[in-house]
Image (cartoon, rainbow, N blue to C red):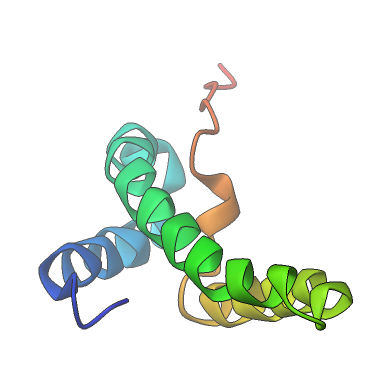
Length: 90
């Protein structure tokens, strides 16, 4: 997944690091670029889990998806904040 989209993921990793340090400044760009990344991740999740759902291992598919997202969150701890709208508290 990352190898096939290395430029996008490298760019997003830099943005993710900036977002961790200052979320309010980077939120809109994080949302915009993050949508593409989440789309790629979900496509790979479907590829991974669709085969197990059809076979005799269907009950393990949900656990496989959870483990996949756990590994994604190890690299991108703020991935769940994509799509969040920042509101300034002034």
